[in-house]
Length: 241
Image (cartoon, rainbow, N blue to C red; front, side, top):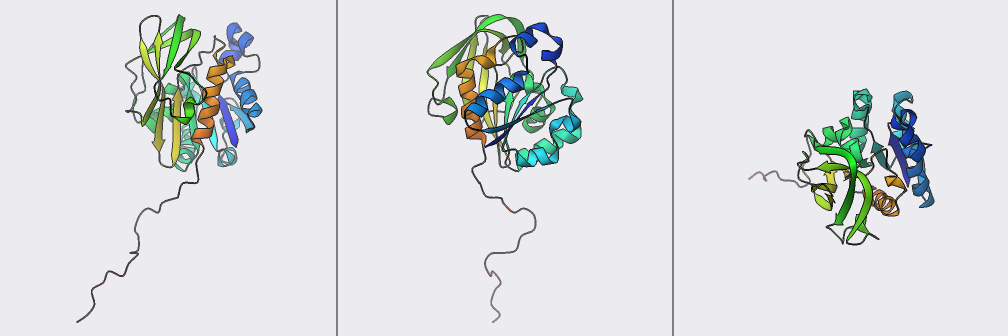
């Protein structure tokens, strides 16, 4: 499968904590474990021409993974529309952590996508609330991340097609941390963990969820429907008497 991992790639260049955890960028740790799973993985970052998301790149991408935070506003509207059209046409999209505020996620959701947050050392307990779903394969009743940024309800998203994970934090908050949506022919998965100053993407369970999500998000050759004015399939004209 052809996967593109898009990362804003700003924190790792200006924040010593982020750089120490992800010296080659979060996109490259994600690329590594997906490549080990057998996928053909490329990366793209904000400061590349067209943010690395040219029409050629997107046309070859079966699943796009998106991480952004500091510079959502710097992503060009033209590229956002290009990504959106590919999702509607069947490209899978996995939005991670602070990508909830990205232009592409907000455009596809049609809502503000806001939430509560707190930078602290909360423990996150992620509950698996749909154990038969392919995204939860290999994941038990729950798993824990010892230190993470807190996200809390209310999360301003549409009602998900499927709710996969719910998080609880030691501060008492809960959050819909794994949710799926369908837009056009495309499948979308939002997955909450991934604050840039914690080694979240090194954790086995987090990697497993992302690997499962990539397999789930790939378009399964669903039919392309015809829209607009359409000729009748049957001869429905009345016979002349």
